[in-house]
Amino acid sequence: MLFLEMHGYGYLISGVFFGLHCFFLGYLLYRSDYFPRILGILMVGASFAYLIDCFTNFLAPDLAPVTEWLVVTMAVIAELSFALWLLIKGVRPQVKG
Image (cartoon, rainbow, N blue to C red; front, side):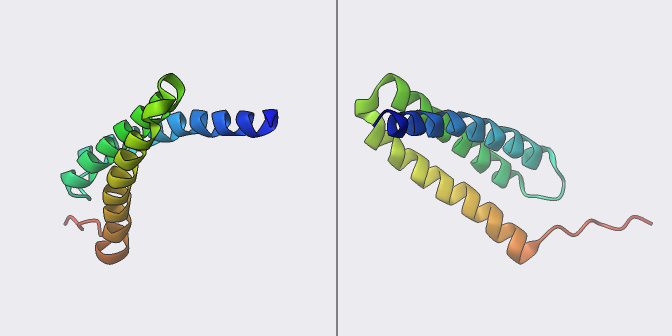
């Protein structure tokens, strides 16, 4: 059982790094001219949801079911909209000249 608990804590720690990844990705999407700014804002919101969920699981495990819904909602909205944008619209750089 010790290794299962260690795996769970390791997964939560990896969630912190994924939340930081989503934050920087959202910042780059926001600053980019190739993507709508709303995608960056949504991705930054999802990053905060991931970070809140990870820290809540460590500090107040009783509140974990509440924050899981926050993560599911924000992650689905942000990551699905980003994926659909890439699949449907794509990135087409403007040719200058």
